[in-house]
Image (cartoon, rainbow, N blue to C red; front, side, top):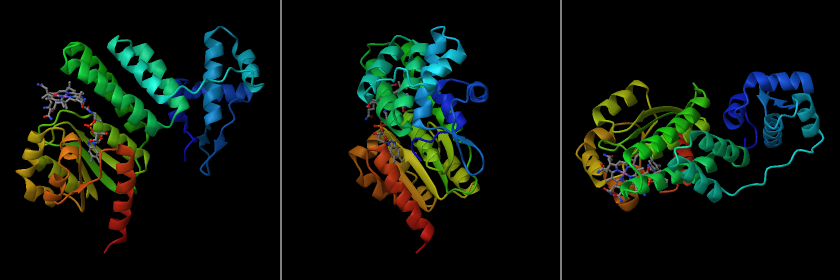
Length: 295
Ligand code: B12
């Protein structure tokens, strides 16, 4: 449900540890999250905003008890809802300046203001594309590109692991096609799939088809999703067409190479769900439902 966050998600977004949140709740009766049926705390968007305001007061030297009072009385300055493209531009600037603390602050702000899906698809991914373009054009060096990639990949992995493992959900294997080192889309896809409740196995860059097939069989995957960026990756897939068509009941292909030649997915007996990650995920949900209902 949008606007309801577990304590881990609040930690991820505000960098206020769970122990501190519970302490505030005990001492100041703030924040007051709802409880799930199982008794877990579920924080709202308003709670998030208040926690960030509280954090800002404390950083400015206001004692915690006083800060809680100010926030409760709604004197806290609300964050102006900064649009996604402004956040994206600043993230690029922070990454190019190798300013990790600045990038962290910016992402905390972005997560507090927008949905995880929007932050991933409209801030984080396009920011790394912009940094990658600068590297391809020679405007920043390898070290600068590596810093940005490592930082973004790290944040997406963190997001992937935050969701926990759902044991009963349909199993989906996500990987980059052979010869593809561009792992950003696959990783974002994995994080967003897990957020939607799937049990996700993320294999990362450049995965050989034989190993992929073994893993998909071992975990009894309902679906395998592969990302290919270049024509050579697609050629490597086409060379193993037979093995690929036996991978799993659903095989989905995406990435820049398939965006250019969607018919290549059909030749591989797989599905192509378009370029937009969020729309592709919605279509994927429908394919899974149809598959689970059976013929
Ligand atoms: C970032 C980047 C890198 C980074 C990758 C960092 C990382 N850890 O992932 C680094 C610097 C390492 C890199 C390396 C290389 N790169 Co590069 N890179 C890029 C860049 C700038 C962005 C790619 C990217 O991450 N896009 C972000 C993703 C999210 O977008 P996307 O792939 O288009 O995917 C979208 C959809 O297709 C969908 N999607 C993607 N996969 C899937 C899968 C499924 C199942 C679904 C449903 C949807 C889906 O989601 C996205 C949302 O829109 C592009 C240029 C550009 N502006 O696109 C070049 C680019 C892709 N790279 C290129 C090249 C040539 C290379 C190198 C070979 C360069 C070299 N000489 O060493 C190497 C090695 C690559 C290899 N063997 O795979 C070329 C490819 C040319 C071509 N068509 O063949 C490009 C186009 C640059 C260029 N203009 O020359 N690169």
